[in-house]
Image (cartoon, rainbow, N blue to C red):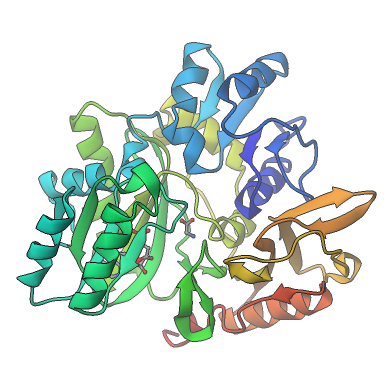
Length: 416
Ligand code: AMP
Ligand code: GLY
């Protein structure tokens, strides 16, 4: 059973259904593209556990909310098999303050920072700084609790938004004010069993809504893998200084980290800094990454859950690039129309696959049902051909308020 309803979960279900060891993949609650949907909400932990028990499931958790709520701990108490981090381990994502303090005491490279719960003290602090800052709400805010500031006035208004106006509710009871690092972002995701961590393929997301990284942040408008921005030497550095160090330091502090460990990296002068941790696969990074997997993902999920990754054979990847273009509904990340019929699925060429996200099936029709609607993902022998394959396939799909960025992958081209 895969828990979640986004493009990431469709990609995980799709990949797991190819395993000879898996009879059926259920997705809870799933979307218009996933099969065997089970209508149980991601926060109904008891309902999910009951279903897993009755159907003899191995469970894979997609999004962060059930992990932060302790789904893995709950399943383990009931002797149910599950892949993902415990509630304690999920603090790396569920509390940004916990994560920053963890990095500081373990010398994991990250932007310098201070923590505040008092707006006046926070404002006095930024007055004395001679660099730009980023203001972050401590808790989970659906990817929105981070305000990148340009100058003093921006910083003051960000502090007010989070601490005074409580725009993100209790998630903003405390804030981090950290140094803004201007560099290049990439995603580095590894799979851990608590002892070792094996790297997944590198990738790069496109977080802003418009081309050339303009406009507000979104959940991610497209991703590609691998990214030439992370070369072999840099990958080694990130693996050692960040990923391995994180897993070892967690262990030293008595927490076994099992699951996907995702480091959002900022590269400056060829040095990596952790902007954030996620304790799950990225969305949309998961779509191009799974498409390049030349191994049975199920085996590795089981090995992670059992703490046996070191006895697994080395993983291999298709020697191709993969690009995922997110098709969204116009208006996202703010308000957008829903329930529009989507057509064109029958014309998708064989080098591409359409992962569903915000869709639903009604009377045999696929309708839009969210902001990020589809992730059209294609392979290619070069980054350039993967980009053109993904866009050629995207052209086949239409609905009245379809919208996408036109420059997914372009940033990588500059590095080839
Ligand atoms: P986060 O959710 O912490 O990854 O932040 C969301 C986005 O804010 C990141 O993808 C970056 O684009 C930006 N960001 C976060 N922290 C910093 C920082 N210290 N310097 C520059 N940009 C940042
Ligand atoms: N694509 C960014 C994330 O999954 O958080």
